[in-house]
Amino acid sequence: MVLIKIRFVKEVIPFALVLLILVLGIGYFAPVVSVIPLALLLFVMFFFRNPERKVIHNPAHILSPADGKVMAVTEYDDQDFFHARVKKVTIFLSVLNVHINRSPIAGKVIYVQYKEGKFLPAYKEEAGLVNERNSIGIENERLKVLVHQIAGILARRVVCRSKVGDTLEQGGIFGLIKFGSCTEVIFPCDVEVNVKKYDKVKAGITVIGTCK
Image (cartoon, rainbow, N blue to C red; front, side):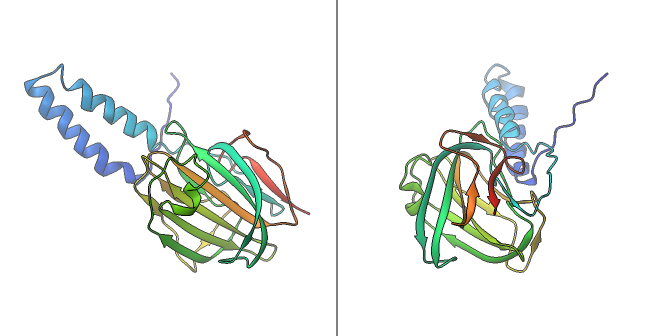
């Protein structure tokens, strides 16, 4: 008999408890109707799953911070963290993707900033500029990266577990975005980009950049 081990992030607990109470309460009086909260409970458990990832640590690699699809690879002048020309990889997460965010590199958290905003669909280009988001900057002796956790039309809560001064291992979990979102990873222009638009990526697994 093969035992399948499924892990979940702790943020699922309040959602699961409320839905479980609804399933039991409604099921007592109207078993057929209880199918609705039961379906929601199963979806919530699916959404907050935390699959085990075997991260291959390499200081020359920048790993994807999120599961999803690459929507753009661009360059721009960053005035907040790098104060230089940088490259940006934008990743869109559907509600079916794992929504846990993992550190692209090993290093120290030197920057965390939360910004309130709107809730446009995460796939829209302007979402990264106007939506609710959290930014986390990580640095080591070789390079530094910046990750934007951006809320979407369904995502109303960005969770960042790390604070300035914390140390993260490459592929280590630092947060998540609830119910549909977008993640951007920014790094110096001298880093070679290994992905292109529409590529599918996995957090802690896919190499999206290589230091020269």
